[in-house]
Image (cartoon, rainbow, N blue to C red; front, side):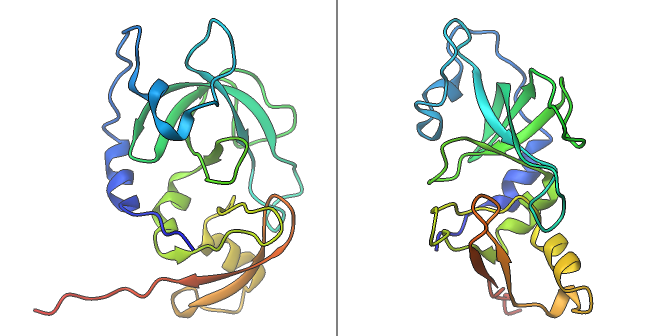
Length: 182
């Protein structure tokens, strides 16, 4: 199970994303995680991103692919502007600036929100045994609230959910926080 490092630091940096450089070569074009994802001739910063209103436990709306123009990145989190109108989704609109990540076993980058980014480092999310996808569409606290409404969020250290890509069962485990001795 891979744990993303520095997620909290990345979140703090999101507020200070560098502005578009206007240069012919932007650093994300050669970023290893994005290699092979830019596929629109003449538009070197445009790629497809899988956007969603949440996973199957939270919404009945299906994820959609949209084009986004990459405008910046910090560590493993990218920022882009949505270039076309989603058909049935409600949380992402044409022209919105979105955050996305590129999971290791994913054909496309996926949309994430700040809440997911804040909570991601606190949970071990194993790759799905069926499809290999290693992320969620929802923040773990949202999944716990929907799936286990009687469980207190703070005391939940492990829970089951479904892979948002294929529906296979997943077991998530909270990462133990180590306090510093004074």
